[in-house]
Image (cartoon, rainbow, N blue to C red; front, side, top):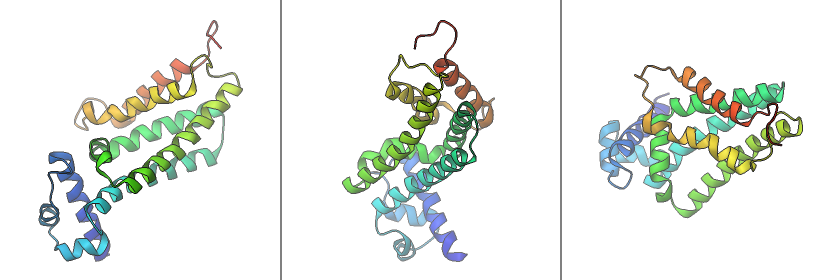
Length: 197
């Protein structure tokens, strides 16, 4: 239990420092001081600062992929499944708001192999999301006059922008924001009488 808390404390301190002052401006010494551990303890879990940055992404990506898999495995009408996926990725992104801030600011600073791994894993998520869209299009639920990559970029641009404006202290809860953004997205892609196909 103690070992797990050391890794967690180092990760928590790194997220806070990377979000506040940037990855490049944060030293290993600052991280271990903020975590209240020694460098030796940190290096027991993380080989380098790059390793620590990747671990932050890994935690968020692993959770969101796991949640996506669970929602799809439950089955149901494609529109309900897609709604649940959209709501979940927004809510988990809000839960990991500091990590998301670090992600988009510092992804380019990862080593090339780590950047490729992050890109690969994000592609797996996006491909499963695209497959849900395709199912809905095949069922005549969603419009097909706009390319799928544009529809996907439209939704995820809202998700990626959350860290720029959302505050847990604000008037809307994460669930309210998730439902609102999901409604806007689904309304925009859903076929209605007179919609282009």
